[in-house]
Amino acid sequence: NIEGNMIGFYTPLPLVDLCGPSLHFHFFDSEHKLGGHIVDFCFSGITVEYQYKNTLNIQLPDNDDFHKSNLDGVKEQLDKIISSLANS
Image (cartoon, rainbow, N blue to C red; front, side):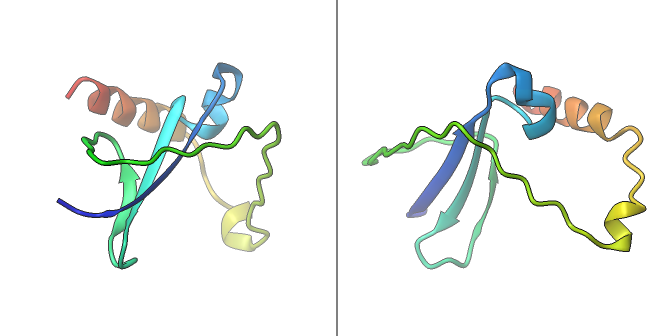
């Protein structure tokens, strides 16, 4: 059992290709030593807070490595990973 915080967002269907699955969560422990992407969880004694946001700001890197990135096949790879997690 680990105490910490979870942050996430809901992505409407038209933006799923840009932002990933409709529900997306990350976790960080209370000591800020452990954290990462969440694919499944159980919880108890929680407090839920939320904010409605109608904007999405994305800041992309502006360097040679980013501009030369080869993203061929990335969507297919992510779809395969998401599908395998959903079926596990």
